[in-house]
Image (cartoon, rainbow, N blue to C red):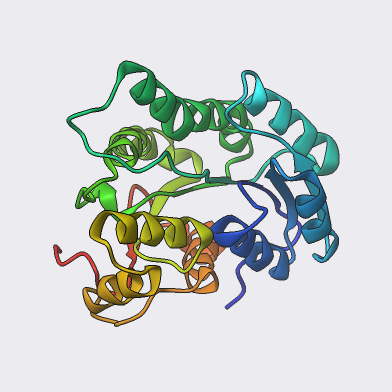
Length: 257
C-alpha cells in the first residue's frame, strides 16, 4: 500500500522511547520528514539521526509556551506540519477518591490543554492546504476506565471528547482526527505500572505482568511497532475517509464493542 507519506512533515512529541519513538520510526520509514521531540536531548537527537529525514528537538511539553516553541522549531526544520501526533507520558497512578485540585489541573494540562494548543497551532494550515492528519495516542481507559489510573482516565477522556467534536468540524477540509487506544503495550510506562501493582499486592513485577497478560485474549503485551502500524495507517492518504474514530490496539483486552 502506498501510504502517500513521502515528503509529508510529521511532528511526534514524546518520541525518545516507547510508543512515540516507534511511531516516529514507522512514519520515517514511509518517507516522511519527522520531528522527534522529548525532554532527553541526547536521546532524541540520536534517534533522529538514525532516520532518513528527521530532527530531534529537546522540549518538555508541560512547560509554559512549549507547544508554540515546538511548532515553530518543527516548521523551521521542514515547513508546515501535515501530520500531528498527540502523545505524552501519563500522570502517576492513583485512585479517584483522593485526587487533589493540583493533581487534576496538572493532568488536564498534560493530557488535554497542551495537546489542544498544539492542534490549534497546526490546524489552520492543514485546513488551508486541504490535507491534514491528527492522530492522538490515548488509552483503553477512554472506553473502559482503568483501576488506579484516575488521573489518566480524567485527562484522556477530556481529550477524546475534544477530538471527536473537532473531527466533525474539519472533515470537509480534508483533515482527519482520530485516536488510537493502547492496551498493555510493552513500554517503560507499562513496566512501571506493573511494578506499582506488584507493590500493592505483594507480588513480584513478573507475577504482576503475568496476571495482566492472563486477562488479555492475545495472552501477551503488544509491541510499540504493532501500535505504530495502526497510527501509520491513520496518518496515511488511504485513510482519508476514517475520522472521528477511537481505534483500540489492545489484543482484545477491552471486551466492549
